[in-house]
Length: 513
Image (cartoon, rainbow, N blue to C red; front, side, top):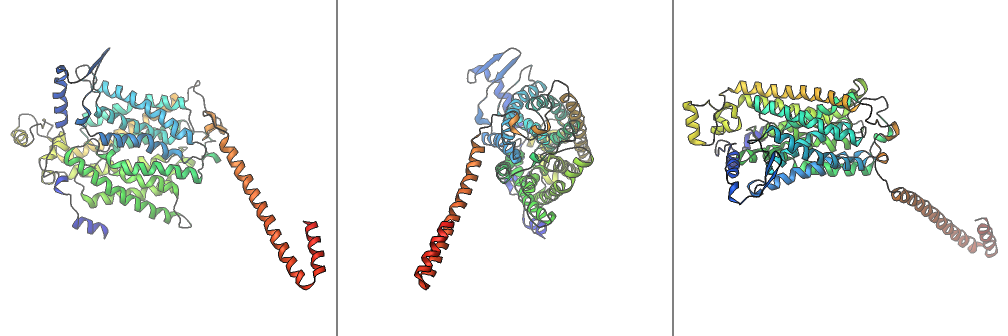
């Protein structure tokens, strides 16, 4: 009923409708190229290094706020989301900080070598944003391994994963022509199943210990990460878009997150025997809608479609935490510490399927001439009259392959399938490398424990002891006070009946006390 009302009365505003304001995805590229040609005029600082010429561009040409939002998600969102482990708070935030910073620098170089411009790597705000997306894939993999690996193993995993991630993305975007605005296939699906494959290779019998659990305080800290991610996810999904596409991506992500949040709360209480909310579901499943809408975030899925995607993803994510995660751990030996399969893996596959459907039904009647900017491979081939007609409306439009909607949908499917295959194969290879002898394996007592790698101040333990002592002292004080009150009552009662008897009884009582 709710979906019927939304579908009947809710439409995109003209500013978010692709048919009203077609904007070429090549516009930014043309401006960037033009800016590169103006380097010699002295307006842009140029620093020359061996083999690499780095241009530092004017940042006002890009949306700095979107970049900052994504940056906060990487360091605060992901970092605090993993603090649910009661004895691994330093490791969650600190090692997340270490791995993310490593990923950013390494990703700039790796991605730059795959996208050279006349033998140079251009570093601008767009490349920094892309590095953040790449770091997100590695941090998702980190979520499957948190508490079970050493910092050295995690840094090594990041160095291995990023080149494999880049190869997969080049195959999907350049050779298949797949679109994935929110990077649900290339980041979330890849990162989740890369991490799960690595976890499978590092499996051990003693992986589950009492330290793996959470506490009231650690769950509360993890909710900080959840709220930051939930608030900034529209920026994550719209960071690579512009104009109407960006507007639409924000709207779709916003609606999907809201419906997913409501669904996660509802299903969480339904699957619990006492009809209570499970903090694990609230911390993670409420975010699944942002992942599930990612691939189609900038497409004309309509508001009701975004709400429906959020409902489906929230439902599947909660059921995954309740039933699938224990099954994978006990039966298949795939231990998933953070449940990345339920937050990133399955919702990412849903996003891929939604992208396939939307690509199959996309037409010029729905998108106008913007169809060929959103799906560049569908643009007419070079020299055709149709291309000339479209270029009169969008001068920056480049020739494409002229493929049909069904072929575009097929390429979307192949991009999803190849991402899964490369992620699993890469994860298995990485797991084998991380098991090499010189790389230290954690002892059972060191699993999910900060003490192995962090200097822990004793103040917290002392404060806990002092608090317990104060509580005992308070109890003793209250007990003494209560005895005094009873003594006074007893004395008064006896005094009224017999002064001598009261005095004797009171003295006896006090001597006994």
